[in-house]
Length: 123
Image (cartoon, rainbow, N blue to C red):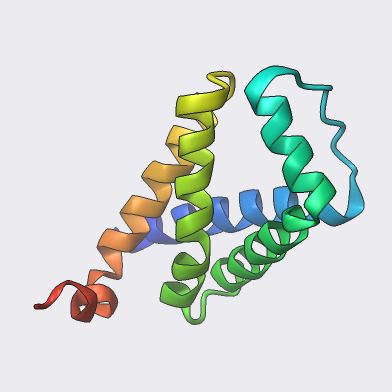
């Protein structure tokens, strides 16, 4: 089980480090979007909010890659993952498979580090 945890941590860390870096470096071309998903992305780009999300992605991804303070990395990435899932559920169905895999990896890591989050669930 420890090997599965390392694999999930590395995969999740790589995904968020690479895609989070794209917010700053623009090395992955994004096709033009229209409709509600295009409006959402344009609002994020024009407001500069995409840089905050990109920073959280890079920081959380690097923390997962390093392997120290994994619960902190998961805490940083949690809201980003929820936003990605909501985007693919409500705005644009394309790419939902990758979002589901990322969510599954994050849930697996949350389960493995559940002792660190136990205080959040106590009344």
